[in-house]
Image 1 (tube, rainbow, N blue to C red):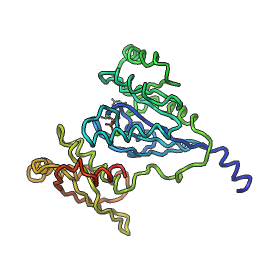
Image 2: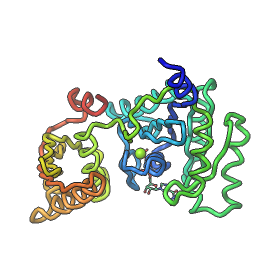
Image 3: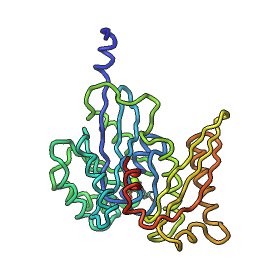
Image 4: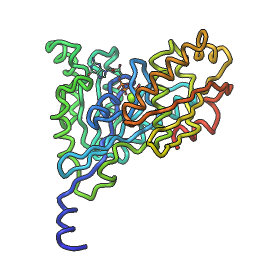
Length: 301
Ligand SMILES: Nc1nc2c(ncn2[C@@H]2O[C@H](COP(=O)(O)OP(=O)(O)OP(=O)(O)O)[C@@H](O)[C@H]2O)c(=O)[nH]1
Ligand SMILES: [Mg+2]
């Protein structure tokens, strides 16, 4: 390596920031806001994120690798256990842990308990999110017990969806990253393969358009992802459900529901790919898919 290359590497910074918190805290919203890309899907329902995904962003000489994680909660079913286990893996290799608190959530004592379980040898930022929904006085009340924990290096008050406070948070995050070469290409925004990303976009629509428990019992698999010479993309996906009755709900009266799901998902895919997308969806019944090894393997690859 020449001297000039040595100096270039020496001034570069790169590191992992694990974004943790309870379901619905706004972790994926923050990762998307920072990267300016749809790295992760977002919905008003809890437990939207099922696997870790990296969002990558460059700030000056630093490459910030954000690890979006599933929300932390007390899991009951096998699938839930695997999902939560995924989240707990993230702080292990991180240079910084960002713990997000939804200031509007109930049972903030659960956040205090989770924070107590975080490793003590990695710097911790506590980020109060959704401050757009609460007045200042209430915010101070919410923050007080977290202050008393004496565990965080810094506190932030942000609105991940509106963007307030996010630039300052990113500046501070960047200052925690160790020196070292960048681990990803300059133009890479995520580590998710295209097939998986496309499956997530459709799953987001299931979360947004289906009621109650049904989205939790679905899985989306991209069976084909073909790019044509003119740049357009053909995507075929199976929406896997666990029962026949669920299939009829997903399809809807006269096929209207699946049409809406397909239309919205295609629109999102086109928006982020900047290409025309031909999306083909079909519904497949796999009883008890949630306990099948194949699905778990695919989910966490
Ligand atoms: N008003 C307001 N809503 C927000 C803010 N940040 C996120 N939300 C909303 O909160 C909901 C949950 O956001 P997500 O980003 O999916 O939360 P998450 O922490 O990734 O959730 P899981 O993946 O389920 O763990 C969505 O409806 C977001 O639009 C914010 O700053 N203000
Ligand atoms: Mg999420």
